[in-house]
Length: 71
Image (cartoon, rainbow, N blue to C red; front, side, top):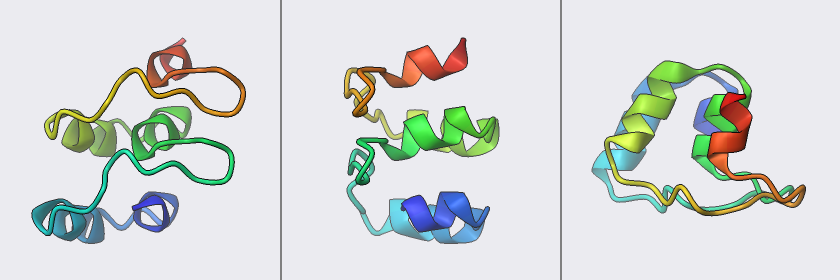
C-alpha cells in the first residue's frame, strides 16, 4: 500500500483496497497509508482510505496520528 502511495499509483491503491489489503499497516517509521497520504498532500488517496474506515488513532514513531499531519 505504501508503494502505491509513494509512486502515485492510484489504480494499484484501488486494486489493493478491492482485494482487502491491510490499510492500517505501518512502515518502519510507523506511518500508516493515511499518514503518508496526508503528509504528502495526496488528498485523493486520503479520501479513498477514509472511505474504507481506516484507523485514525494509530500513531507513527514520532507520536503523531494522521490528524496531526493535516496541520
